[in-house]
Image: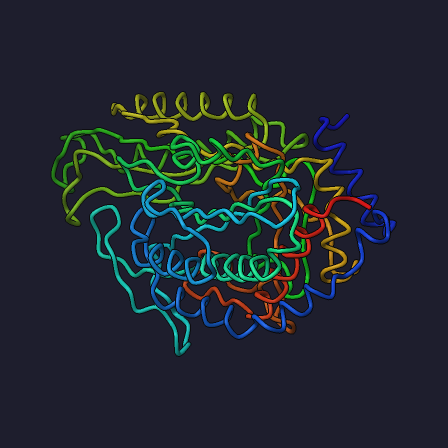
Length: 440
């Protein structure tokens, strides 16, 4: 039997398949959404291109935060800056009593050198882990900020007739704070994001290359995996490359650890129940072709959905690393996990089922579907542990291009079809208005 969240997700799949809807008035397209989308289309595109041309790394989003605060102030809001670094938060109070909701967009870019021929392509550079790197909005956070600014403007324009209150959360460091720093959603919450403003629900979105532009993907229950980082240092003894017997080779030991670790998921984890991933993302060691170095460092990630499976995989990786290294005469210093990772992103099943008709109304029922579980991770998960949450994907890949082969999020060739800005604006605005106005 599937776990409870998966049963809720299967129920949502049935709703999608059967075309089930909430009451007709709750699911009806809103004329004000159409009007706002038409009015704001050019401005949202302008915002997105400006953010794209001026990306900033995690916990370094100084200009980005300044632009957001300036735009919110121009709308008549009172933005609070410096939240969890360069985060920006503003609250809109409607003219009528009603519920409280929060809407979140992430702000940071990635250490990626852009390879797209665009007039607004990023030429920015920065420093990451001591290296000079290109900087690019290769994950679409530029689009998220532009969409949320557009939704804020549309809701401010309707302030007098708007029931309730809306918190706009522009969050830094979603991709993870640099080593030795704090950041992202955990720090926003630690600094009291919801103190004095406890939303009934929080909503967020993500443009996604594996979803066709014009479509939305959403599921109740588990959506995105938990993410843990690990670091393993293999320590040997340096010697001349022509005399490997004169030392202990950490390169060979590291290679053996990488190979042996593949059996953790393929042979020791019940992936028939839920998927899991162990990935080595970087290996560094040595400086010269004929010197066997003292040590090799490896870093990687583990993705899981079940806490028990997570703990077992972490233990297995520690065991593999230490024992394989010992078989080579080497030893390891292992940080498994290396710090606190993201929990799984879990959509509240009842909230997702309630707001599904709103997404259908925004883009058409035929354009909303339930995706497979995603092994990517999101620190939106921390908000979802605090209050009922719904997170959904907006298609980013242009019609005529296969989403399965399109450059993915985090690729230097990630290419956003800008029609996704209109889709995201319509969807998030429709969801916000329908929730604020309430069922019926």
